[in-house]
Each structure stands twice: as structure tokens, then as C-alpha cells.
Length: 93
Image 1 (tube, rainbow, N blue to C red):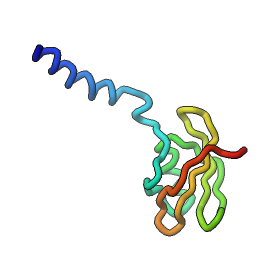
Image 2 (image 1 turned 60 degrees about the horizontal axis):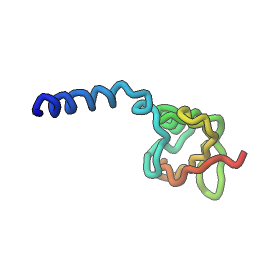
Image 3 (image 1 turned 90 degrees about the vertical axis):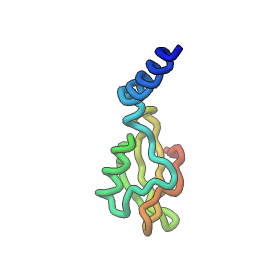
Image 4 (image 1 turned 60 degrees about the vertical axis):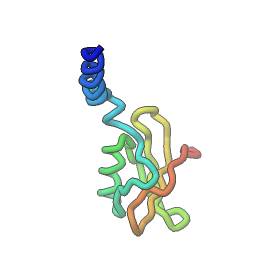
């Protein structure tokens, strides 16, 4: 019984480290990605969101991107003062 428990403890972290989904996940509300396009693009792409453009909308920065895992177009709203993600939604386009 102890052997199975030990193997589960060893196998779980190895599985998580090798899982492709562990490397790419959409950014989450509250993540700080930056206040300029270069920093925000790098942070969003590291999180699995390929950025196509930025635009100002309702006093926030809107990053248009594609989720690498699902291929869906997303809108990521960023607070221009803090660089924090405030909202993520499916793109209307």
C-alpha cells in the first residue's frame, strides 16, 4: 500500500510537468501583464494567448488575441495604470 502511495506522489508531478496544457493556459483576471504593448504581448504569449492587436476601449487597453489551446479569438481587457487583466471574453469578431 505504501508503494502505491509513493508512486502516486512521484508520478503526479512528473505528469504535470510533461503535460502540454501546463505550459499554456489563458491569462486570468488579476494577472499583471504590463502597461505597454511589448510587455503585455510577451506576458500574454507566455500565457498562451497570441496577440494580434491592441486598442483603447472604455478607458482600458483591449488586447485581441487567439487562445493557443482552443484556437478561439479572445478579448483581454487590461487596466492601463496597473497592467492587470480586468476581464477576458470571447471576441465578437
